[in-house]
Length: 153
Figure 1: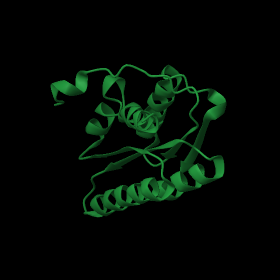
Figure 2: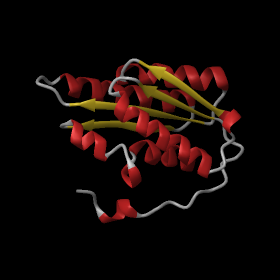
Figure 3: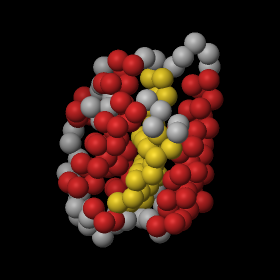
Figure 4: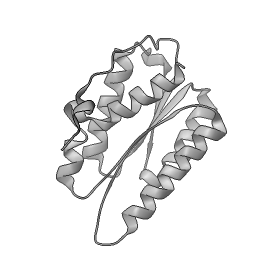
């Protein structure tokens, strides 16, 4: 169940001058694909020109920090969004992946001096992942808003 304050919509600002990258994990692509669509729709709503958007695909969430750093450096971006989905399995592997992704993305943000939107969801099952990747609860869109707001500071 989501908290009420998550239902608030953030009013788009003018981000038309920003260059933004999205690194998306192809693992659980049915989930991350929907999150990518949400991220791209958000960029469009905020006025980011299509020619100023770069998308890179990785195998899994573990590779997202490297992809974000590479995108930011290669294209001199103002912000990057990381999109991934880690679903709990029978072991604690998901915890290690999530921790590595979070730490890595934090390091990228601080080292590169740009915001990195954290759109890596960690869920207990596929149903939770679907709920967080579609509609108003799309975490790809939310991570993009976070990155854009920080880039516009």
